Length: 178
Image (cartoon, rainbow, N blue to C red):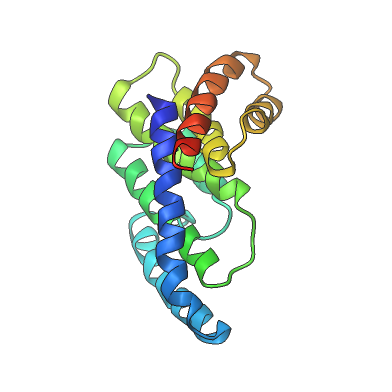
């Protein structure tokens, strides 16, 4: 289920990127940046009001990932996912330069945290970490890199099998679209 959810989330992210890119591509770069910048400020406001000191839409999302590992209410995790997904898509559509690896990990962690709030696994944080790997796998359409990254960064070999299963599912789901 987590792999399928990550595949759907990655598809939603790709659609959001396309949705923003089409109209903004018609604008000169300076105007595209201005429009995207105003949108990003508006997206940052809910995060600043509801979670002061936590960069929900800004930056790579590593602070957000750490916050999610500390335990988050389901509604909060879904809000993080929506805000980060739209902000990252708008950044790229507006001509922003940056990587996609860490934001995709943050989006997957938010998705995993939202699901974790629903199913309450025996090992808290498991779905957060596995979701991060699976979402990155679906976004970048790779299977092993996110699993190896997760194993290397956490030092927990027990995460390899669940992450591999979820990432393969997410990878296959992301390929199904074409």
